[in-house]
Length: 423
Image (cartoon, rainbow, N blue to C red; front, side):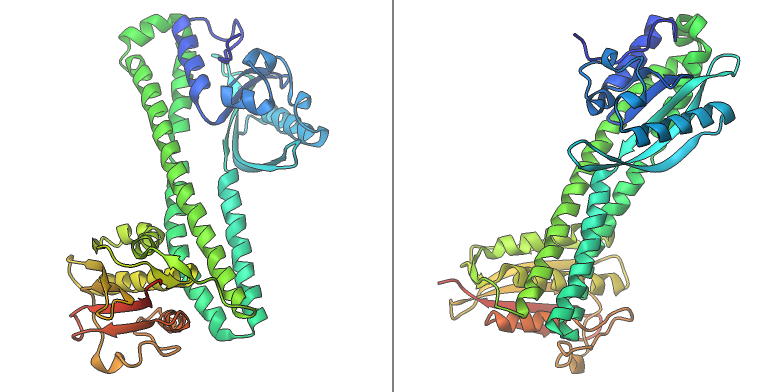
């Protein structure tokens, strides 16, 4: 049996209207429903059919929320719909949570509106819900990570460690903020309103729908509008999936930083052979969103070099910090020519590998080159002076070094992380 949701007979008459609405309800990823004055389902999207546990729309049509939700939740839904029927006032942007039978919590942003006939009389309700569970999970994980940072720093009893954690987590948070802004922008796209207007037009002309769709200038645009909204919805979904993947990886990196700092109070981390180019590439992924926003040109030169013997979290922490500082230096420099070059080299002794981060930013005064790794020293108005200090300490703990070189203000800077090659 077909699982394509459809309106019951009588709600609309013309086949083209039925085809367009059915096609939309079949593929839209959001939960969409239409109900009569008795709060019984008249039609719903396939995504909502699956969510409610039905095989086809016919399994759901004619039933109410009480057939699918716990009594307390069903009562709230019914009361909202009855209030909407009485007042005609829509409910927009409501944050809802539901506890599924398996105990998992799902989060939605819901919109509910009155369904009117040609005379303007309210004959039911319709609504749209967007699942934001992933976003809420990311927010919860980020909040927990922040709490873990504070707990770890208290356990270690060292303000220096706490400051180092917050600085490095802040670097990752910049990328998280870019991804969150991208997701928020996508969620604010007013495509649902366009579909609502198209639906109103179709309902207004349902008695002469064929003539409206073929001859009316506005009617001829409706199929293209629906097609464009569907295409945009698919593109947006793919873009959101990519951003969520970035969010998840950044949250994992925050957890790594927290775990690394917790280990300071007990034992050292695991030293293992690590591919040098992969470390640089992972650090770049952590900073990708901010680098694009800052309009910085990037050049990478990763020849074959030996693997390094290091703790992954510490090495990644240092490289993310150096790339972040290079971005800030380029952004503070006047002009549009902003460049960062990342290089790998094998030291002359052949038992060391160099990670080089070079920028053409604001540069460093000669007298500051000996102070730049000191705790609390910074040349940025919004800096804290903990990042490079923490990075230099992490390099020493891995039997490596971190050095800086600059020809002066406006001449850029070069930072070199040198780590022992793996045996």
